[in-house]
Length: 209
Image 1: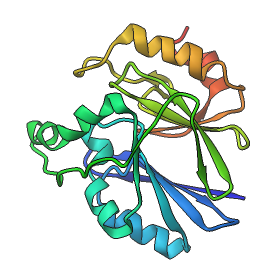
Image 2: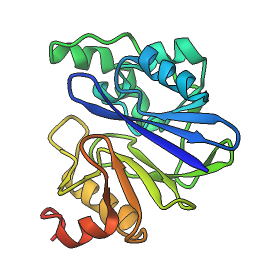
Image 3: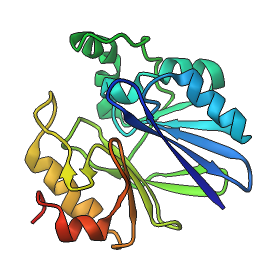
Image 4: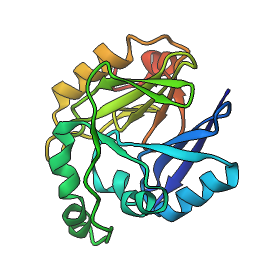
């Protein structure tokens, strides 16, 4: 069994996800957006042990709670190698917007297309989905028809590409060749806003028509 908690955090209300395996009570945190101590406390309240910290990408609003969360849990951090440089600049990027975050710690493991991450008995497939940011990945749970896609595809929208490292053509390629190839009933859990499905976005998303 699976439990997913969506935690909108920080000044940009970025979605952090707590993904729990109810058979083993092991859990992953996907994009610790802000207030890592609060994320850790939520896991404790639910009875989970956080074994993985998974980053879709390294924009500051997705890693603002990373330092506190690792301090609280000592869980290893997973990131795509192309996102490491942006992670090292996250504190400076936040300051540009007048915000302060702790310096992110060094990542522990590098992610690659097709890699499978085991969280308890849950298997997450890594999909390489750049365009919004360098080294952007999505985490797909085929057994449960769920994808955590960071800032690639949103309900009725797509990720912005006007930030450093963004590229619209690359983003559209990621959406069409990695996300829209998934079953229509796949739930899309994004970095901002409400959940949607692949089928709903394929049919009605104005950026995809």
